[in-house]
Length: 243
Image (cartoon, rainbow, N blue to C red; front, side, top):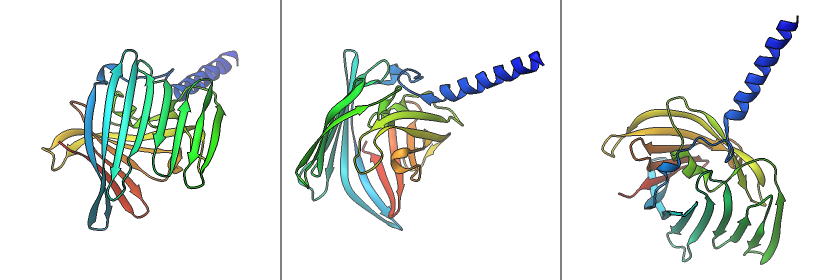
């Protein structure tokens, strides 16, 4: 009986450890920091409905290594909209533990300073209302704006599945520490782009209530995101790298 109980305990511990290891956090992070490069790239942003494809804007991304930190600035310019949407994220380069995030667009501004308590503010421009942010968190997590970049730096392989712990602030949806899920990874070809070898990565997250599926097409050799697809009710959003 003692041996049976000991065996059961070891199995339980093993299963518990597996569950913990399958969740990626800054404290349990298998990403390759050598893949982080100084980059500037641009993508077109389109919506596809039935057989119609309409470009609605362009997205520029700058990634910069500054000493022991990584800075990511994303600038969105939509057609017929005079102002840009600019997101800035700063994290520790060795773990991607978040330090700072800001997001400015025509509807609202958000600023987050990461520590044991996440502080900052949310300014709703439609109602001219500013709310102070003070969120007590537990555990280890990434900024929600970081995880789409993190995916390209992970040790991807066929059948790869992971859960990613992230923090997101949205007063009209879920706020706090939530999850993103890498559902599947498979090797494939990117048609119409020189038949490049790519990792096809299927992802969803709690921000979309695990309903929408995002698909990343990541160049196996240089880890560039060549294409990203997001399925929505009206059809499909597509981001495509401008060479």
